[in-house]
Length: 225
Image 1 (cartoon, rainbow, N blue to C red):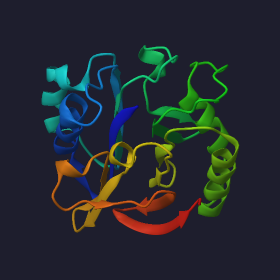
Image 2 (image 1 turned 90 degrees about the horizontal axis):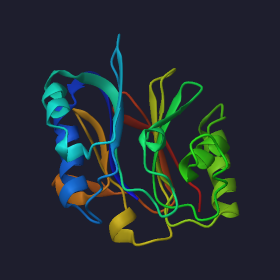
Image 3 (image 1 turned 180 degrees about the vertical axis):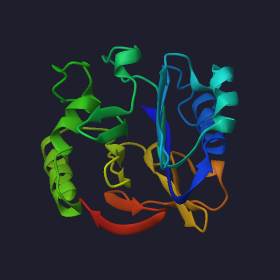
Image 4 (image 1 turned 90 degrees about the vertical axis):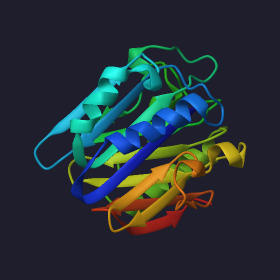
């Protein structure tokens, strides 16, 4: 159970605004507090910044100040609220990484195989969907997982560092007010958040919808149900 955001743009953008909005959602948003640590991945043309902390995102004042100097073309920020039965610690923080791809997730997968290195339902989901060659391949992988598992939410943000693409999935069986993802795509880029009240211009994703985003534009979309 988490609050999260991702962005994609054709130009480097400052991470501070996105970081601050995730901080507000984590401290004051639906289901707050989301205080079991946080993590991020940001890619620019020549740099990759990864950071994780077991501090609540809204208490990490030093990194908040540092974000004023961090910019990138694509990134994910995730504030964690651990699901029941999942350990709390640095190793369980999102985004997870497998073979050039990063994934952050919101929701509980009740019947996930947690016998993995991180004892994580999210990592089980990631292992099941990460190997795909194109958008249709990802859709098929996610569909198979949806059909086979019991979950409250499979919302995900997946960043492919090789082709600088962002994949966004809004998939849930739980409370729509908590799980609906909200996005906007304008001249500054594409942004997606866990709540609509952090920006007046956000539109809701449909349940079951997946986007592929590159350089700030939605280039492919599909549905898993």
